[in-house]
Image 1 (spheres, rainbow, N blue to C red):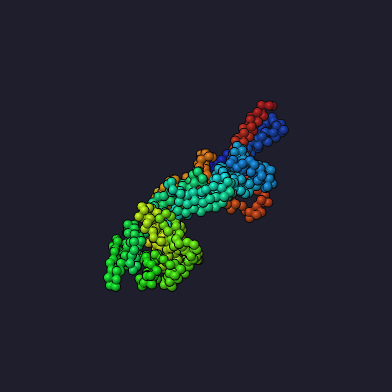
Image 2 (cartoon, rainbow, N blue to C red):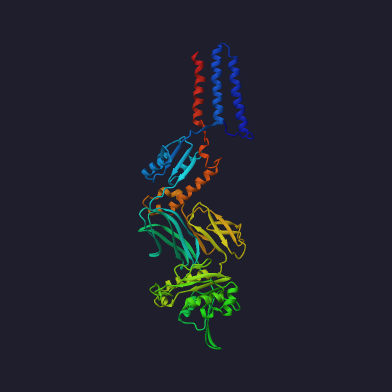
Length: 568
């Protein structure tokens, strides 16, 4: 048995203790000196005063005792789990006692069992708090058409690939689409049952970006992230005679505010030079664009040895030219001809040579295009694309920009002060930020109205970590140029979302599942024995007489003490 702790440094505690001592001694002294009262009546009065004194002490000290829970199991099912599924689960687990979450909420006391099996994930924090002494096991319920997992990057560079991954339950299958506005940027056909998915999108637009995730004709949720502006490049074209393709590319690069140097050698000792956006004198270019005839150029090799990037385009016979590229640049690209094809049509205005790259360890393909990148000191990219300028001539400048932003993204130098965060970021839940390749040692990261402390990463000396929790939802500025979107906490608003609302199948459902999983893991850490044997260990709960109970006992005993003398 335990009692409420007493603070003997407080004067009130000593005063109450002295009053209780007086309440014990004085009645006994007065009753024993009372004349004309029989010994039996004195005994009755002493017993009543003793019980009254004990009840007052109990009201003050609030004693508690431990009671062992009877061995037993309870299946507690969320309200959105079908009754047939609940019955089959209970039968498979051998559990006889079954309660729904709504029935459990209506009960004033928790059923006295030592083991509770949660089925589903729609439970509030109040309900879970009532299960603090029980052994907990959890089985998620995959609601049809509802997301189970969802992840993407909170920040991507312009031209980089944004990847949305997750898992969803689709009993009848369906088409999962990722849309930018009204345009579908990627899709996948789902089959029946739960399955993982992977959708991608090239972030060709800058700033705050929104994608919508659709299952057939239903919007599951909105994917929000920020596309950082692409770093500016110094590009040098090393060619014998620039053609319309390379001139169109040079012009587009200049419009993107990159520095471009293009030399046209007409004959020995005679040529012309075009410069767009004046470069810094003496600096090596960040990117060299060349063709198979010039891969042996001294400037190409010098730049590659210095860690710069090289793009080889305008191939005509890849089976002959690729081995020559490998010898000159110390790469290991391999191509194979596609039989029966003269060209490969990628879109109405874009074609490629009838070859494909062989997959090799360490190489990075540019998704959606026949371009392969291999790190060799710097980075070398080889393109099997035919002419791309018809896309610009036809007016499809967006597709042209998307193509070259995608090709250039893996060839850019590592960005400085690169902030990363895994999305979705949820209100009142931890968000992990990473700062890579900083120009100066960071100590703080400003997110919204909060300032996060930055700590060095334990492994990477050029990486720093910060942890934040945010109280408000919506777009939160990060430093001066970025922003992160914080989604509202579904634990607080879950039941305010109608069951047939699209949002009930989106990020709120994912977070509800993850919050319950986090609570179950935390709950198990407090078990005193390994989880494999915890079910066999006796579990106890703390019992106590409530304060109003002690008051009733005191009132009854005071009445008895007052009535007893009048009975004689």
